[in-house]
Length: 488
View 1 (tube, one colour):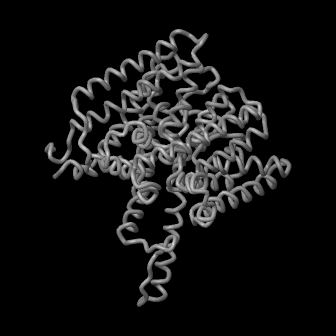
View 2 (cartoon, rainbow, N blue to C red):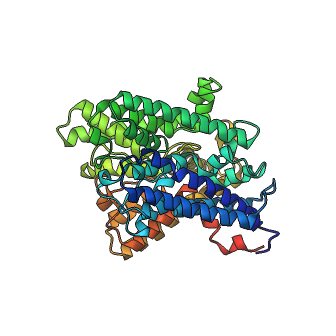
């Protein structure tokens, strides 16, 4: 492609800056490396060294600051390359440790971390060293709010070009700009994100969790990732208080951070409570919790409070695509499992750290179906779809339908590939859904008490693809792979 369409030197320079920052972040887990195996310490030092070398090479290729404006095509390519490079280089410290002998496993774990999926290939996570635990959880926290958004906050390289990158990483979020400049927006959101993380960290410590594990779980919760330091996940702490704290912050992570800004900074609670997406998100969570709790009460001898707490925890965990567990829900009634499968598809709010299709889009689809019903009964009528009082243009409707089709098409193709590799139907479908909607645990052989470690190596590569595609909401990632993107 002609350089007039894509400025590769600018892209190289920016990716180099991101990778240099990633190399510095790889050294942070070594703060907790006192008394750890020198092999693990060396693994992080080597990973940081290789990443810094790659960053230096990319900066040398670019060798100049980028121009202030960035075209949408360049922004999409840049976002995809930053995410792919982050996952690849972020796997190096894991691969250099004895815990991940195969690079595919290290890459799977790294991708699962940065995309906040939380699917692990490790059966005994308690055997991992502290730096590895912290790197896994830190990757959740970095990827939850968005690698590009973090870059815009601390590496203001692009000026107005940051707008295009922001839209490419968070499709549908351009209306969530809270301040005139994208740099100010990024910094405001990250301050709130940091504040909530610190608050959860302190509450978990107050509830009896050790400082290191509290830090790891605060990172995983606010990033809605799900990596834990315990084999039994949150159930391993056997604390009702810890469970309720994690439930609260998973719920907060699933709400748009634009709404957190209005509540915490602007001190305007009324617009937050009137927001249709927030109300629908809370209503879906409440209804799903009640029906699952009733299912547990009918099918088991559990008491009311334990059943309600288990239902609430798993509902919030799956709806926010966090993936923590306090129970093995693969043993629940099929009805309850199906409800959780639906919640994987729905996800959290637009502009949150949760993944999924997003609640606003589900409401949008329901309004679209309602409009078509009215058209059948009143053929001469003219009907508009309104959201929060604004008319939705036809272009946005087409975009949403295409997005849903892309997600279903990817789910179908990936499920076919996994079943062709010998996986059973339930495991194949649920692992694809859990990967592309960044949930983590699925059903069948990849349930909350299992890992993805026994899957065939080609299956792991398919799921890695699904995780990145889902995290970038399909369009940005998949369009770069089409011939039309590379034509004039």
